[in-house]
Structures are given as structure tokens and as C-alpha cells.
Image 1 (cartoon, rainbow, N blue to C red):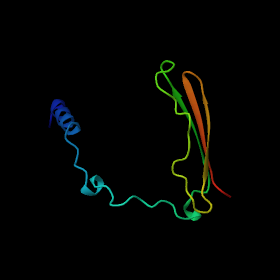
Image 2: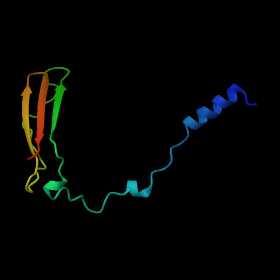
Image 3: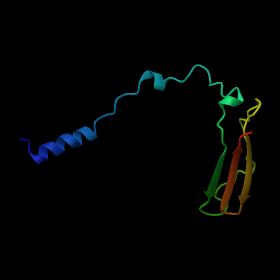
Image 4: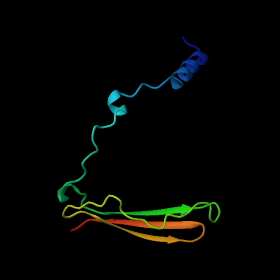
Length: 103
């Protein structure tokens, strides 16, 4: 019968052992970027709303991003649209990002 101390020592060694290395396929980037959605049937059937708040520790600690926009706007028929509503004061910025899917 093993002592309680021996069992805890084995458990402690197991918890601190090195993790298994990642497979090579996870470490190698794809040869070309993904092509993305190419037709409206691949889009989600509902939209999304993201309500983001950034707070500064003191006014002017860093500049706000005033011009929010979609940088990857799809162009195929039936693509979703994104709109931004931005409100800010000296220490807090709120951004409401709405993604709407065409009916």
C-alpha cells in the first residue's frame, strides 16, 4: 500500500510535466488565405449585436477610435450589413455594432 505522501508527490509531478508538442499541421500556416463566403446560402440566418465598452483609467490615457467601419465588407448578393453607433466621453467609449442579415 502506498502512503498518502507518495500519491500526492506522483500527482504533483504529473501536473507539472511538459505538455505534448503540437502536431506540425497546427504549427504550419495555410498556403493561401481562406476564400470566405461566396454565396448567400453560406451566411447565418440571423444577425448579431455586439455592445462594446472601453473605459480609460484617466481622461486622455489613450485616443479613442472614432471611425468604426466594416473592413471586410462582403459583396455577393444577400450579404449581411454592419452598422456602428459610437458614443464617447472623456473616459468611456461605447460602440454598438449591429450585423443584419438580408431577409
